[in-house]
Image (cartoon, rainbow over all chains, first blue to last red; front, side, top):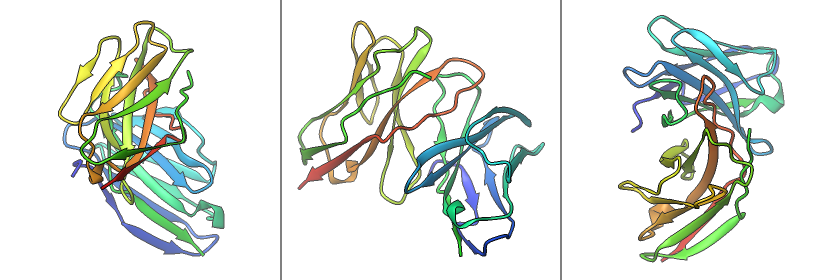
Length: 114
Length: 111
């Protein structure tokens, strides 16, 4: 158990819909990262927050957005869903921004878009 | 970001040591070398990291070449539970410490 929790574990929805994925980082970790894992693209970095502020963006679509709240939990919002958005979405956390910090990953949310 | 090159797959026998190689010829002085692994149906898991010197922890050892252009993750006694995809990743020490995953090495462990 990494200490990072993600809800829900599974999500099945239809094209065009909007969903919210939630992540609670390890206690004390200020940095939260979101990653997407699909069969064709592998694991890809989406976005990073540190202490409530966005710090880095990766291959995140404009239909996707995220935020980190004052209690440090984070939400990833996916809208106008397409079939290709079906994937595993992982959240990770780390104490600080330093490159020597390890990232702790949650169990993931499996999103299926029908 | 500096790139890493790993073989696609490796096989090992249970209870034998495994050496997983990684080439990173364009590494810069501020890049940390991290290894993560992903067991089937699980999220990635941190294994070990280093900068210049060899490192040991309870999971593995990391041997870093003197010129830092390559490294080797060493599992001292492979178990069936070590069957996973192993990723070698370079991370700059700075404000943006995102992980850029490649395809990794798929390690199979034979009983």
